[in-house]
Length: 375
Ligand code: NAD
Ligand code: ZN
Image (tube, rainbow, N blue to C red):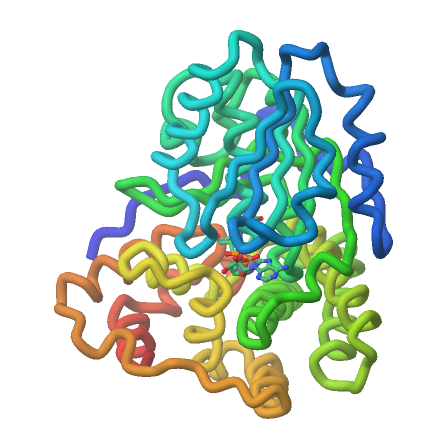
């Protein structure tokens, strides 16, 4: 199988003149139960005038719930409900941008994403594409965005992905699943209101929470590890262990998982994820398997690479009586397996982080296929 040569994240920093990444962080963040109600005050100074709306992209799981009247919609603002059943797509971003351009003469004053990683990523991408011409698919990659994005706010309603703090928005295009990684992607404001996560179903709570746990395992066991990543990764790991392996009150658990997600996101910001993520991308691309559950499906079979991480993961699964689906890859063809393997192996920085410079000699397409066959 041919492995395409791609730019290495670690060796080539964001800009040619930079020896180390000059990483953007979320400049403003509010934390606390009920902090969602500060959104109106936060948005007010950002409103350009009455014809320049704030567009609220909201997970449709909240349609008709008590959260909606709390959204500070004024003037010509609009609430757009979006399903998070599928991973966000570049075509979806393009359609939202076209809709906003058609309905309004003026550019919006802001985009607010309310939901899980899916809605947060859509909000980031729409904020970028409103000022950058063309399709979202043209910006998938590293540092391809050159015009300032619209002011955008992220309000997570489920914890784990770290999308609230990251510099990427992961999108599915007809050709690939890849993030728009840019300085313009990061939110200008985040509201961390743990109470918003209270309605998440048990299984989904676990899958998205495990995304955070796996971020920590992959970052802390990676060759890219440095003191910056480690400091965040260890904190996130401790919080995950508290949440998933000890008895906490519901509110304590919500608070801690929200902060674990934040720290886990910060940890991978300055390093990388690893094998579970690379392989989960393959599952997501071919079968549309969602990120959190996809990571779990792969991770359970990675004891060879992450022995301690997988042992703890198994304990967490047992404690919360999680049964992962099986037989997902049972009826796949050789071409399907090849496709997933190609997508997984194309994530070069992830493999390099996991296995070092010599990764091509340590992992083979056959090995990956044998793992996929178990899923
Ligand atoms: P999600 O947004 O896909 O939502 C998962 C499910 O939970 C959906 O059914 C949703 O409706 C539901 N949900 C969300 N909040 C809820 C609430 N409060 N009550 C009840 N139901 C609720 O979940 P996710 O796992 O947070 O996000 C996955 C996405 O995040 C993937 O598309 C993945 O690619 C992306 N991701 C992005 C980054 C990044 O840095 N940008 C990092 C990791 C993952
Ligand atoms: Zn992840």
